[in-house]
Amino acid sequence: LHELLPPEVLKDAAALARALKALPITLRAPRPVHEAISSTGGVRLEALTPDLELLGAPGLFCAGEMLDWEAPTGGYLLTACLASGVRAGQGVLRFLAGQGAPAAGVETR
Image (cartoon, rainbow, N blue to C red; front, side):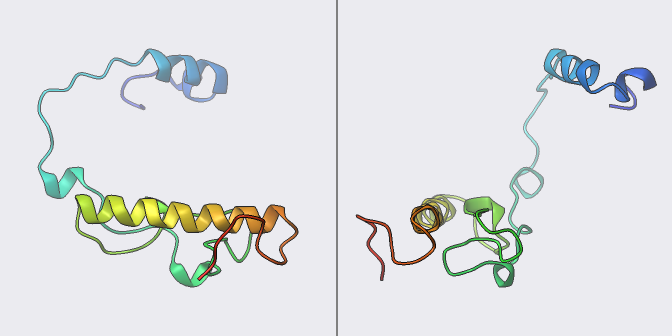
């Protein structure tokens, strides 16, 4: 952005938002898979409850590629993202129900 926009636009949130929305993106070719696919990084599992709630931020849940895990790309990662979303969603229901017993209709195992 520093190469494309004048400094005054970078300092003005509204102007920056307008510039970003109007920014043309030209796809010339896809990047090599080792550059295009994220396969590591994210929120460490030690920072989460079993319901995938952040220990330091009650009510904030993480799932999918927000999690720090090493995983191959493809169907396995998609399945893990969906499964962790279900787990976090069940945690949200428990949180909203008062952080006590599981919310109605939520199956725990």
